[in-house]
Image (cartoon, rainbow, N blue to C red; front, top):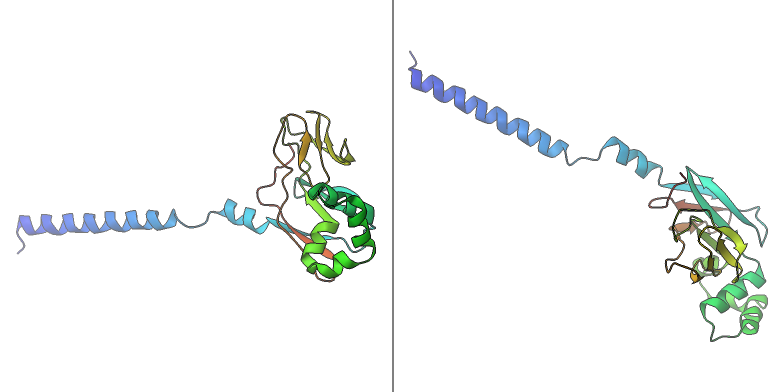
Length: 191
């Protein structure tokens, strides 16, 4: 026959083990990825067909509720963007390098694609979240009509009440130049 003290010992040990097991279950289940994070991660990148775009085309697309501007610069726009990036080199030198093909031959394909294609979020960084106008403003880049901010062709503010660049997402252009995959993670959504 078991004594009262031994029975109490077994009941206490059982409840301690059960409490420990439940605690460990909730500890480890709390560190797993939740369904909303899994959905966000699965929807964090999207692919856009760009093979038919002509040089000079600039479009604002709504990708899963997030506006993204994609601008395929023509040769003149590429030269002006590079001149804004490095003003120590004259615009004529940039134009000559682009028109002769020297720039394309001198850069890696991905680097040249970054010169030709500009991809950014067109949501204003200066305040109320307006959509900026593409190919506008004093610097031929973007213009925020709500805050009066003028951005250059690289999405950098040049005049107005902000010093924050337009948000450029991570992107990968296929080697054949037909598709671009854009990461939407961290981009602001429309309201």
